[in-house]
Amino acid sequence: MHFQPELYPLPTQTTNDRGTGKINPMLGNTGQTQYDLRFQLFGIPIRIHPLFWLISAFVTWIPNSPQLVLVGILCFLLTVLVHELGHALMFRRYGFRSEIVLYMLGGYATGGRLSTWRSVHVSAAGPVAGFFLAAITIAVRIAVTPAVLEAKPVIDFALANLIFFNIWLGVFNLVPCVPLDGGHIMQALIHRYSPLRATSKVHWVSIVSSGAVALWGFQNGQTFLMILFGLMCAQHVAALNQRNQFH
Ligand SMILES: [Zn+2]
Image (tube, rainbow, N blue to C red):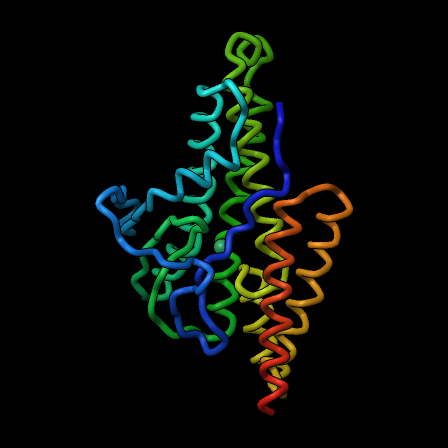
């Protein structure tokens, strides 16, 4: 089975440094289209933009295997949904409405102010939900007999996909680089505990962490990862330069 292990760290909207929700610029233009798929889960409105399917197919692509690609897309969708639901449900727990929009990069939009630790909880809830699903899937994989897996290799494929996507999506989202979840956690903690020149510190931590991941991607032939983290690194370098010019 071929996987591209690095794909798709998922920047999501949590809260900015002062705990105010706003649309994450990395979500890009999430304009509504007539092809959007809309539904609700646990009372949270969910909208899937058509481009999400395109990215999903890119992530899960296996030549000449439409059935496996379809299974891969469903596993990927489930992974992203569980991650986003983790954020959205935690946000609701703290009394705010939120909406999940799956675009090229997933995310959720909400408006509300949170304290530092509540903000950390909301940011961490996405990766934690994914790790929880990975643990359940591993348990199922252990419980299913080898005979079943041999008779139905597609089940084996789906379980392996779920474990893989959920672990890596969580791990890369925890890199302390804004706008990833780990970045939002780092940002909230710096503003709370080391507020002097906090914005510059956030840029610096983001530069070092995303630069390190980009370098790792480069060394290990993970092109997508290298480009994605390289771009985030470049954005923070530019923002820091601009900031230094005006201060
Ligand atoms: Zn997230």
